[in-house]
Amino acid sequence: MHIRSAPCRIACLLLALPGLAQEPARNIKFSAFGTLGLAATDTHLVEFRRDSSQYDGAIDKPNAKVDSRLGVQVSARLGDTLLATLQVVSKYNYAGNYRPVPTWACLNWNPVAHFTLAAGYLSYELLPNGDRADVGYTYTFVRPPVEVYGMTGITRLRGVDAAQTFTLGSGTTLQLMGYLGQSVEKTSGGASFGTWDLSGGLTWAASAMVQSGSFRGRAQSTYFKIPNNFGGTVPELQALLTGLGADLGQPGLAAVANSLNVKGTIGRSLQIGGAWEEGPYQVQGTLWHVTSDYVAIPTTNSGFVMFGYRVGDVVPYGLFARSVSHPNPIPDLGNLGSLPPYYGPVASLGAIAAAGVAEGITSIDTNQNTFSSGLRWDFADHADLKFQLDLIRAHNSTALMVNFDPAQGAQWNGKATVMSVTLDFVFGGGR
Image 1 (cartoon, rainbow, N blue to C red):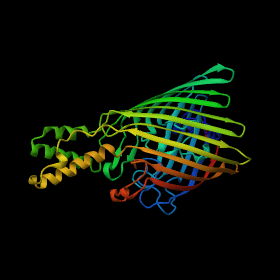
Image 2: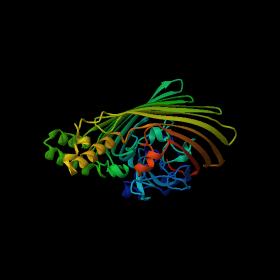
Image 3: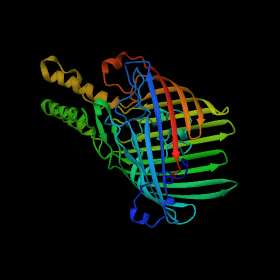
Image 4: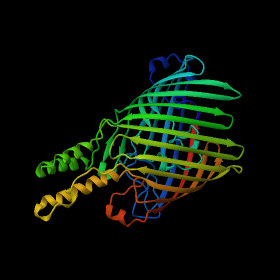
């Protein structure tokens, strides 16, 4: 299974079944990959999840839902220039189940050397070494660092991508790639935001990747138009603000309610990363800058760096990740949160609304870092066993953790330890 090739050489959709009848059976290949994982925390006050696509996460006792996943793929070579493949992955999701979804589903056309065009379901390449987040065998650590990748809501789209590779001499290549399409994701916003349907949002991305000897560097810029509003308690808060504005004669409260509509706002990101592997040494890292037009999505800077050293079949490694956001100011609500007692029930509702706005504006804030140490053991061909210890320190924010009980969150001291063990494997000859 060639995991690190250009997009759609790993996994694309089987779209041309009639044509397969004309092709030899040897052109059809099957493969699979997966991770069996256990993760547990040392606190019952907050949960730990791998990313925002998961409804909840690990807490106290070990459980398998955070990291376990299974993927299968079938690919077919249709003549000299077309490759069609379907890849489906089952993993714990926003709805709290393991419903399989296509992570790649496209035709890959290679009319001339060094140029590819793909159409269908496509996945972003996010990790700095070109590895796939669902294929744990391809990267050293247990999971992509949550500070950098934990709030990545868009990883797949339905559309097209094009890639052109240039040879620059002395073993150096440059690949330019562009994506254009619509997102096909849903994500979990917890109790406040509920399930957030991000499908149908206009998405484009452009990237440049340089490969020279043992070094690989990549820069990517992404644009995303948010297609739908939040669910959860946000619509109730908007209705409350609008009603209070009418009752109190304060039209500005209705304007604040309207500002909580995220639909149609724009999210942008810039990612720069690199990886170097020479002899026993492994180094990689990423810097990520995210900004948005939406009042409750803060500007966020994050990054990680990892060092590893191979000794035979074993790679001990250390990793540091950090995420810091710069929240937007809370809208001016006047004295809504401190109305005089003679307003009666309206005063209580005003305090609830003011607290809801403040929580909504700050709930996606991050100020968190993690020190990780681990060990990867390649005990067999195409299989590894990993052990990892994460020391998490969150400062006045739990946006990268899962916390459905504000009372418990208030008791949490911002420290958590996550213990993980995973078994990764790949089978077959996919492309």
